[in-house]
Amino acid sequence: MSFKKVILFSLFVLIPSGLFFFFFRKNQEIPPEMVLIPAGEFMMGSNDVDTSGNPGEFGNKKPWYLDEHPQHKVYVAEFLIDRYEVTNQDYADFVQKRQRKPPPSWKEGRYPEGQANFPVTGVNWFEAEDYCEWKGKRLPTEAEWEKAARGPHGYLYVWGNQFDPKKANVSAGGYGDVTPVGRWKEDRSFYGVFDMNGNVMEWVADWYKAYPGGDYQSPDFGEQFKIAKGDAFGESGHYSLPIFSRLSFRQNIEPTARYPFLGFRCAKS
Image (cartoon, rainbow, N blue to C red):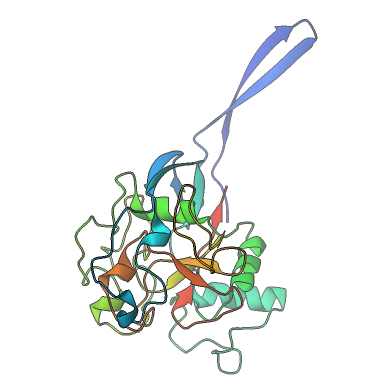
């Protein structure tokens, strides 16, 4: 990975204690596999209200929406995020060079033939974080992930506020299997990040906790579950419902868990 030239402008300032140099950075190019997300505020979470009457009958283990309350402004500093989910080939390089164990689903330690460009799955939170650190990166925070997906307009889906199961590889779309990264051209956020609405769910850095000012209390809150964001190709829930595709949806998962619908991407400050 190479960075283009960074142009530095220097300003010489003479003060009583001596001559100081102030440097200003201009137009540092980003790695081609990453996208720059600008600093600023965005609307995180939602104030949506459940009208189904009994969410448990749909296979849900928690009340709809309440852990997303309240919708609130969050300032996020400038950061970089991977344009695509980490692929099988990416992870195979990590396994070989760092002598790590491959995902248990890989037969004889190899990903399925012809799936080099598919998102890696079956990786737990600790392994995902280990990979990102090896790349000089880290897992994105929940706020970073949600801002990169929802854009400056705070959309419910990367393309807007109207659900369309044919625009992404989501559970309600009926495609039924994982696909190569970047295949779903309309699953592209305002900033140019792909597959945030579907394909596989993604680990983020945060523990599953209440938002500031939230009045919903859950025994699952605390440092016992990590958060996964985004929908998956059809196995993210017992039922295929549009609610799973909402970018504000929060899935709480044990950090040691592995699932065939759960992957990740990396970020960098």
